[in-house]
Length: 196
Image: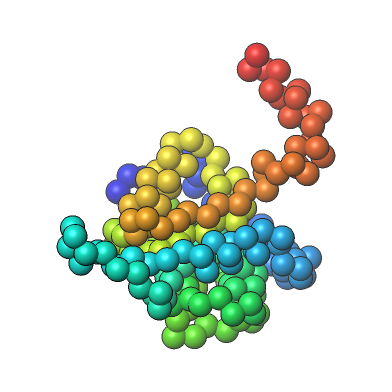
């Protein structure tokens, strides 16, 4: 296991302090479910688990219970949405760096035998996971907080290792949304000119 980059360590510390300090306000401003949650739920519901018995025999397993890992789960809005909409989940693990946001998540949807919430950063947690142990890894507004390419590459390699063959990474990063691009168009164009 390699050490974390200085920039990533700094960013984690700043984010942890910010979200722990402002967890109440952050959570209170996020009462509505994100519009993307419906697409995530559909993706999870439409995935089919195939059992490979040998090279000649493959069968569909419609009753497979999905294992979901949400990286930087925040106050638990996605899990609440999935639960409220009856999405079949075998097990759910939410990982976040903010203890206060995890406490908020626990208030919104208390843990059960099928759920757990872990206080950790995404890279460290992924490195501790067994290979091919998760059906779906979900990242909502997570990658935008990884400050350097090397760490993003490490995270993606770990995600690839941890996902079961044929399953999915679902990533929604608002930092590249149309609304964000429209709102910050001038600043983006200005910063982009430095590279031209």
